[in-house]
Length: 254
Image (cartoon, rainbow, N blue to C red):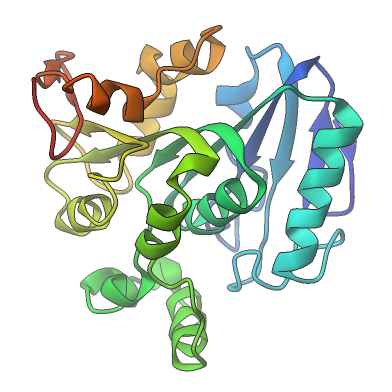
């Protein structure tokens, strides 16, 4: 892997397809890039991003950029330099929040978000905000909201720019009330499709989704992207039972 500052690493592969893996919260005792094992089989060019601060990329990618605006400039530069014709983003948990912003600001092809955080203010009202593993993270989030951060809730931005991303797949467990609420905030948007796991919570669903669910890798490797907006215009489809999860278009049925 070629390191580009502490917060970014690049692995060369098929230059026509760039996959950007955006790490979630890095625990003090584990600061490796997330998704390394999941990403290993992919033959595409891979860009890994991480931030070990509680700002979650709002102050830049460590050692690479210093602001949200520079994050977008960096990603646009990398896309152009690589010559990618398709750009995919994979992320989980709090990493999904900046990832969604970047995807819509830049305009990309597809996103795969596990346990997405779509409304920071709503999360702050739950027990998750006081979870010891997230010490400092949500305190910083509250400060951002109190300062008037305009993208605490991603829905308005996503709704206004739903044509900027062809497909967003979200993955979460039906027994995790926080994740269910966070997913419901965006699940009915035209470019969003849901995979709802029958078992697992915010901490267990990622392990299953990235180690045992063949669906994500199959969609990333597919030569053609299925567009949820097209599926909705065609009348949608009945929820599809995958055995371990339900694939569905919220607010739309056949």
